[in-house]
Image 1 (cartoon, rainbow, N blue to C red):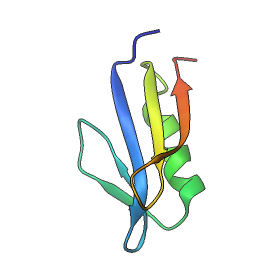
Image 2: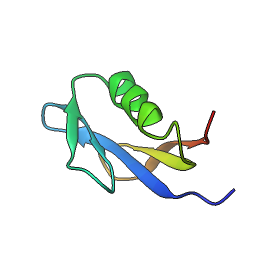
Image 3: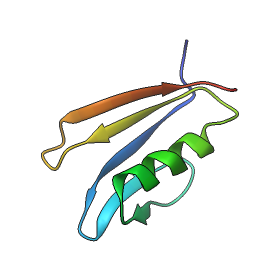
Image 4: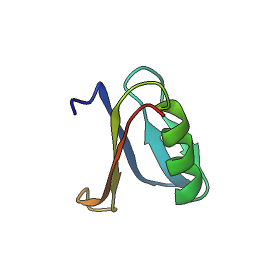
Length: 67
């Protein structure tokens, strides 16, 4: 499956940031909130969600496609 875009979730000063390629960065208090938001954003197109730790290494990789 080829992905249309990649969503990057990483630690932020006030929680977890979710960076989408088409919009500005959004910050959430909890990591599950950021992951849920990213999953909702890619309900229509195939995307890859990368959850990174504070050093930038990939902690978790989710591959989401249209439902």
